[in-house]
Length: 273
Ligand SMILES: [Zn+2]
Image (tube, rainbow, N blue to C red):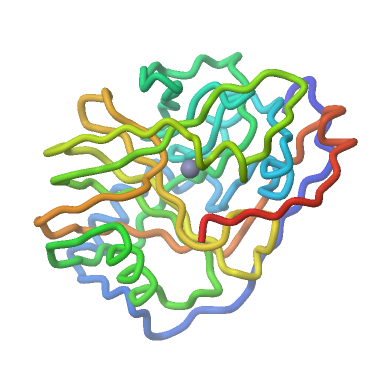
């Protein structure tokens, strides 16, 4: 990371060993496709990467110093928020999209800064199917049922055809930051769309992650026409959903290197669930 001192970087490798049976069933065909599509990613790290910590983000550390150019070295999919909450972030195929509070979408530039992010190189390990109709709560329940163990991390890159979706944006804030996420998220801008195709990019963190990240599933969406995007709040579809998944057993994060983070009082707690 050029011109930036990493205050603290932590890589934890969970060596749980291989299990013979997985609840995610993978056909021979899927295995071949998975191996082929992963060839160009084979050299990329198979790590769940996070910038900043959830506890800092909740407690108003809204000035980030992770450049978009750096984020792109950490993964080809991702989600998060830009500096000063000037837009939600969803990264797909290595392209980081910024969705501003008015719903306008642009591509994040290399010098733009990010305040919070989850990212990874998606190494597809298999696919399972969820029969329609499906809504967001039943989708998350199915992921819980299908995952081999709730103690691992997971990444998802899911193409979907939806009847309806409700997305959340973020309201831009100025320094000094006075309101935390507990105040800002209930008043976040909301965007709704019908009959829309796109991709859900998401992550699952186990409950033991505590205040480091958001526990459970966290999904962002970007439409195929790149006109709609944001944090997924609700969706429904009559169609089946094919869910490509990637289990992660390594986790790494970098902390912000600035005064706001150095001096923040980490006292408010907030979780989506
Ligand atoms: Zn989000």
